[in-house]
Amino acid sequence: MTTPQFKSLRRAYGFDEVAIVPGDVTINPDQTNIDLKIDKLTFTIPILAAAMDAVTDVTTAIEMSQLGGLAVLHLEGVQTRCDNPAEVLAEITGAPQDKATALLQNIYSQPIKENLIGERIQKIKQADATCAVSLTPANAKRLGPVAVAAGADVIFVQSTVTTARHISKSYTGLKFEEFTGTVGVPVVVGNCVSYSACLELIRTGVAAVLVGVGPGAACTTREVLGIGVPQITATMDCAAAREAHLKETGRYVPIITDGGFRKGGELCKAIASGADAVMLGSILAQAEGAPGRGFHWGMAHPHPSLPRGTRIKVGTSGTLKQILFGPTSLTDGSQNLIGALRTAMGVCGAFNIREMQQTEMVIAPAITSEGKSWQKAQC
Image (cartoon, rainbow, N blue to C red):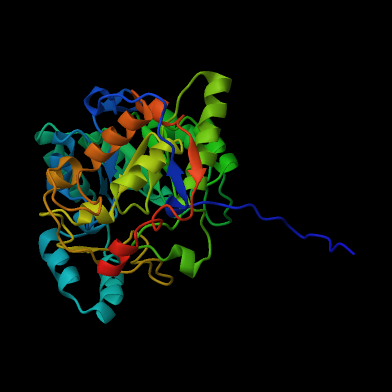
């Protein structure tokens, strides 16, 4: 007798379970075009620095822009709550592990100062850098115009899970159709992991969508809440939504895979899965001069009653330029990420990101262990 099913499950895949198939034609890596376009803005590398206090401050936002990418400043973090963020960051990174979460909860309970929003943005703009800032949906309507008036070029609206429809008895949810039409700059929204949620967000007029729930090294959302979809499957599903919208309207909305990256190969797999760009946290927190000073913590870590993150020690591996462009003598794929992407595109015969999205992929659960017994033994 067959037992009736209450619900069915499908297999979902993460970075370690798939591989990219080389193409029939190869091209020189230096002939590849890896530009990212968000609305009318063009970036020469498809890498964004995450809106996390350990990753992005004014200095790193400027440097990232000079290197061709985009760093997103967290407008609800220490940069806008504290007059002296460097001292506060030193206190966070110097705290014992068992005291770190309580300390973060206390620091992030301080009020956001609107004057600091303007000051931080203006410093970035004075360096002739592109300025992107991040807000939660609850604060976007109030603080978004403040950021734009100060000179912000892009606004990211981010939360653990963001949808186009939010139901609440206590307040009117953010309506992205209205917000994108009135704020005056491109709006990027995240995070989501499903075809239907992504398609609804795209239809509101947003400029790009962030994909990923809980994959970050410092995030514990998957453990605390049990939600999330492995990044390869999440990216493919959201890329399908982008394609459906493109077919319907002719408007192309970039998909940005956010979180879970450890090395260049995963960046390449994200692009091959359909992403237009990636957002990095832990990898860039390892840069010399990163505000986290060798530590990293997630945006949901300081939640006052249900933290969904932890402070982790990532160390320092090299300069930001070295992590992005090399040269490197490390063999673990954590540096020269752009070199890895261009090389992968070259062996796949992909001249641009759009062509790389069309490359064949296979399910390959042994891809990181096959034939690597000597490497494993030396770890």
